[in-house]
Length: 510
Image 1 (cartoon, one colour):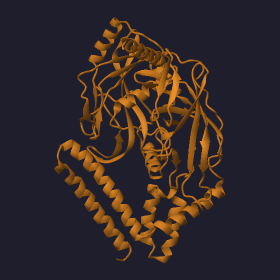
Image 2: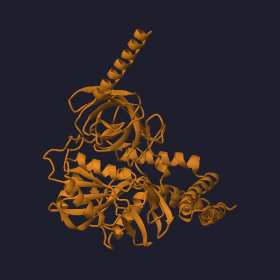
Image 3: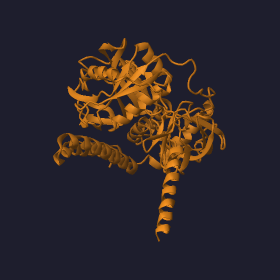
Image 4: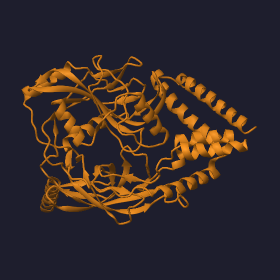
């Protein structure tokens, strides 16, 4: 018996040893792991075909169990699994596309098979279903088209006014492009659908720039004197937390953000406001839309950077303020980064604004990984700030959570070549002028047959008013902390619904 017991112990020890060696040499990446990628090849539902090869690059490292499994810069390959275009709009109102990724090339050149599907289009107006299918928008669902529908209903009872109604819809109101088009540089989130086993690598994704304890202490002292919250001048309330310290010159920062695909925001003006409103009404993107003002030390931001795609309600963005003093001869800049994820209405100090993602730490990670991948900067330190509240609200009432840490990013001259070259070709994204004209009339007629009636309009007004009330009541309840905060928003929504129904009944002669 002792011999058998000793043999069993030896076998157990051997199994444990082999498992330990396996764990050191390999990393298990489970299904469900998310990959942040940037497309190297453009795709378009109008002109792309099934089995067209596609490629992308990993722009943020992937960690599993505290170990880095995949480094930024790994190349992914795949194909277009399926694609459906709107065409003339006879069969389909919406386009769709399914992108399948089947292999990944590691830094050492080895290629591994993988299975991954699209989980999200970053800042995209398109919806991704549970199977990874990208579903395009319905062109006649834009705000401008729906408003024109109400105008038409009011005029429909007067025969001579039907020509005016047609003119409003066909000549004035612009339908958004329903075809899906993603240029090279579009960012997606993938979900791994089957487990992967990868060789472990000792190299990190970011340059190993170690700070001496004295350097870190000096940085912490400088950061401690800087403000941790911005101020909303409209409501005079504390707003977004500061979460990134930039170390470098203005020209270095500008070069890094541009290399990472970010754009500077337009200044607020009448022209930019009109362009913004039109883009929102027509459900399309707008190049470098303006940002609302936030103050730090009673000063406006010195720089504003953002990254979007084709949905004006969504964008990555940050504001940057120059700070007094220098560190190792380099200028210091404090930034507040957050992610706009939707429009918001009836907020303190503003009738119309954006709602941010509550997890502002994810946006901090997004910015720092983008800058590191640009080969123009590296994250050199984390600074703990116990004075930053771990949960609070910004100036318009959105809640946010954070660990309070400050990421320190140091800039240097950019590399001569970009990390990965993008495919500069541009596929056809839509048909010709006459095809688009015919498609427009077909889509408009099709939509009117289904939706241009009193019952659909009442349903539409009720649904959107309820969504507005629910969002506003949620923000109000978080601010007040009790159920009574819901009543002002619900009362406002109910009054709005009554007015809309009364107008519809009057227009229809009810």
